[in-house]
Image (cartoon, rainbow, N blue to C red; front, side, top):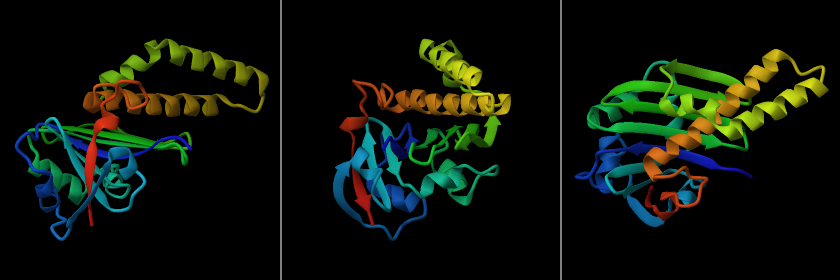
Length: 204
């Protein structure tokens, strides 16, 4: 089935209460409900909010897609205004549909926005992140390239364009996992990650 991740992480929030977040982002009518794990929240409807150390985590399979436009949406503008001194990261992955996305906003300004689905890049803005630049040096990525080259050699219909698209998709997904280590100490697919420790509250 693979991962489904729909996370907005907001750093530098030591003095912010999770109960204040709905009002700050324009959802004042929401009321807090039951507490669940952050991994369970990925499969729930609505919005779930939690806090770990000084980082607020918002989980919503709808809200994350407000951040993958060429121009910042109303929600993105509201959030950057409310948290001007934070790093805001939108991290999205649905391995069922082959969608990945990340938007890194630092001190109110977009640093990098990239998303893709099914080997097609949908948006690609800003300077490459350090995590992206590390990918080609990774021995596991080199192994992926070797296997892809072997496949291309055995399949005459597999074009250079398709190969490039597969490489870009793989870079995007691997960058997503590397980025999660910024907020969970280790990538969410590795042992020792803090991801599994986090609890969130459902707001409905």
